[in-house]
Length: 221
Image 1 (cartoon, helix red, strand yellow):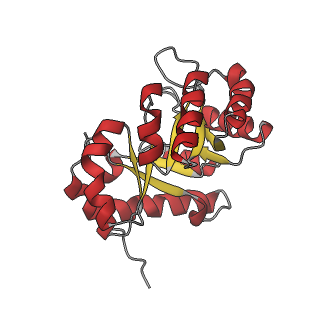
Image 2 (cartoon, helix red, strand yellow; image 1 turned 30 degrees about the vertical axis):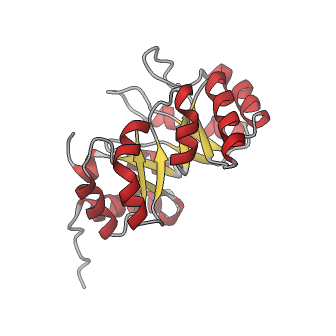
């Protein structure tokens, strides 16, 4: 009996995640698909929700405030993750809006998020973002600064669940994913937010627990 060919982009991405997980001796259910819906209209998001997708990622606080209240009111089981850079002065809004923050990367943001959590009485799981390729233009803490930032985050009361990275563009991502996995292991963390549309299969094979997929689901921006 022939297997059904995945028809929608969501089915295709899920099938690719399952295949990559199988190659690595993992279960597809160990990987959370974060559908990155930045710049996309509510109609496109609702279409994915209708297909069963429940975890979405946004890059900006303001866009999320404008777009998501009505969607979340209709679909309270949807999780919303912040996957873009966060300004410290937006920390309180981020704690109120999001169920997970993937981009904690500096002491000032750690402090702001800790104060926001205390004020709002809400704990939000966080990933610490590592500048894995040591690129000046990218967010993320330096590899050498990671242990100190993790200690500061814990002292501030943040719930750090793992590490996140965005590898340099245009070169093989696998060594960077492997390094993030090693850093997580050295620091007692088990979750890894890594892999986007062009490299998520590699990320899954190297231990990703969260993949952040935009264009493969929604089309080019």
